[in-house]
Image (tube, rainbow, N blue to C red; front, side, top):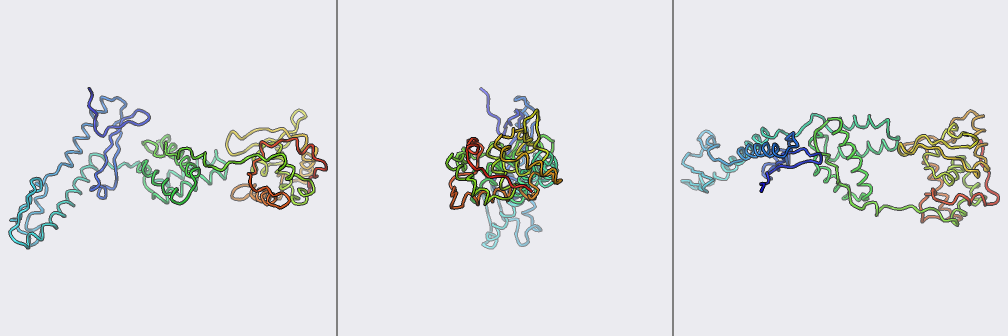
Length: 399
């Protein structure tokens, strides 16, 4: 029968660690709640030997011994206190000759305790050095964001940066190795206390998880990812869902007279229609260049080069209804006029090109003549035959 080795743990990769939880009385002096030291082995027998050796060293440091404090009982250490005061803490003996001496005992005990705590803290730090890798969070964040600049779209990159900045502002610009699971857990609790939705909190955890994975894989620090497995369970079930428009709602949205009257600008006019027939995202449509619409073997396609992630790159056929409505002709007129963007009047903002278009479309849905306020604007699953059967379809606005 094997005996469990105290303070011995193993990470998800099979590497053994020595974990020492600092007693509450010493945490202020030590400056940490726990120490973790890699035993640099996956062999259980070797790990037990090394862990036991560290246990002996730590316990030796922490073992109380009143003889360690003779200097506190000398006349030159405490003016007015004579050596006739007898203090034997292990035996629970405190002897004094006068009431005045007895009144000094609490101060002596406090001094002894403080000195003992400082000595124990120094001893622990000698056996288990403070976990530091030499890189603070701010430096690691800058390196991480510089690397992700080439893989994330601008709005996503800014979101990552904002989350990491908020985390560093909360926990401080500490050494990366000093961030533990409790640090991230406390940060998660702070977000929930501020009223953040569970899905938003999980977004923060996802970004932190990726950040610490980067630090570990790039050998910035040797640690277990402190953000791993800290997600709020079933958070996605509480998220707001977006339903496709019903056929009746689509008829109201795209009623020719009102649609053409209220959505005159090219981006207001074309973006909802392209979304209806392609399922593309608002930003993907609003940021299109004219060269991204071209024929392939006689079939017109929209070449989406950049989306929410790397898998968003795709080519989508242009539906015949969009061609009949004049999308290809609109593109040709833009090229003749020397424009490079499909919607030249749209200027990119902090969140890309889509802001004004989506805001205007939402305002349009709120109009009394349309009055669709209870559903999301996700039209990716909407029937695409409705516009084709609508009489007097609106004609495109050209420049």
